Amino acid sequence: MRWGWALVVSVVSATGAAMEAPVKSGWEISGKGVGEARLGEAVPKSLRPADLRARYFARYFADFQPEEGFRFQDPPIEVAIADGPFTRKAESEPIEPDAAAFAAAAVKAVEAGAKVRSIRVLGEGPKTAAGVGVGSTLAELRAAHPDAKARRVPPTLGRDECVAMAPALDGVYFHLAACKDDERVVRIDVRAP
Image 1 (cartoon, rainbow, N blue to C red):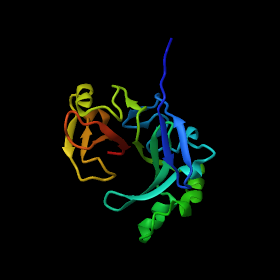
Image 2: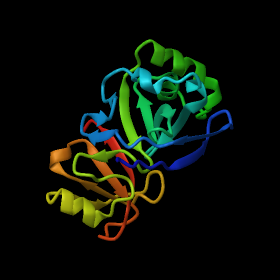
Image 3: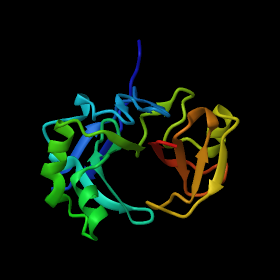
């Protein structure tokens, strides 16, 4: 008999509604994407639920780079889209990242084939082929990927002042609060290297 598990994550969407769902564990992290979400490809149909508009986010990231996409709980990822309405507008003039103002246009962009720009794994479930995911320690990452290197970086989204990378996983960035063996991965970014 095979036993499974579920983790319930609660997030407040752009519309303020709480969303809860069990986490799938079958989404593998690679340099090409996370499960069905692949870099440079259209957002997969499995990530286009009826409430897609409520899952939309818009923000500035790191050094004031506009970013927008959709937040999911099953699997626990954010999928950022390329050339979305907020990004296009923010690149031409400084504006507030008002998710409500751009959500409908972003959903239309996805329906028209908007491409995946990056993916963030925010919770337990998705893992690399070697079994590393959010919650793994830096020591576990290094055991699974002996060539992994960690270095300090400026914080971006919080609790992420260390990033570890393994050459075999080009484009996969493991974020930790500090570069210590007992620190746990808090987020995994997948983007073009």
